Length: 275
Image 1 (cartoon, one colour):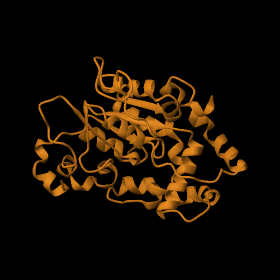
Image 2 (tube, rainbow, N blue to C red):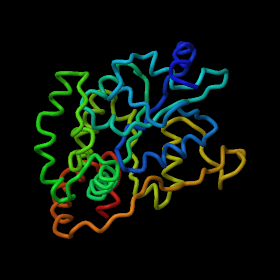
Image 3 (cartoon, one colour):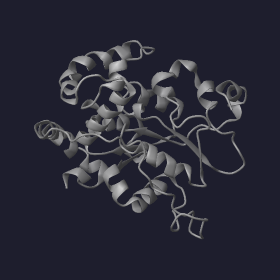
Image 4 (spheres, one colour):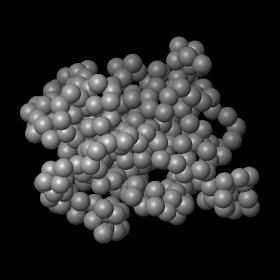
């Protein structure tokens, strides 16, 4: 199906009941695939991430609806996963305006590892040419005024804001605060990716509870009396890379200490990377 074909039937299509809004390089693809396997969920038809509320908002809600399944008789949820939504300065307001009852899932991981993983990802895609240490040094200069310009010029797409926010994207508590002001804490569920990959079943069941979906009954397989079987939990999009220089790791780790402390109320626990 093409977007053009979907737009013809847009009024008959579902809108998301929940979104995975980030953070980038924190296991969003793994969570997306796990939730897509649940029988109570239907994923976006064309892409994992539609990127409507960050990069395509000018296309209109009909364009957005074209990406989702036709509404059926069964009560199902549909969703998408666009990790830039969490960081983009206008996305949260746009989501609140267009999806007033939506629930939001946010994944967080060790922000030092997230920064280095994001760097390796951007380097491999050709969006970064500097060393990791130099990219960190340049970040403040690259991002200077970009968020403000996005707000002032809503059609503006900032390459650096999207691709070079290595430290800034790991300051999760600030971004969660922006969501809380618009949606309230009850409609936001934060997942510690370290816990998700170490022991996925209880973390996944907590996500299902948040979404009002049936919990899983056991190993992957046919649905049992208590709900579907667990999907295969796998890591996706991991890239091999050399270790972070110790001095740089220590500097970044210290930078994130106050931000990580602010995550404790969101997780109801100390973040896995600080235990």
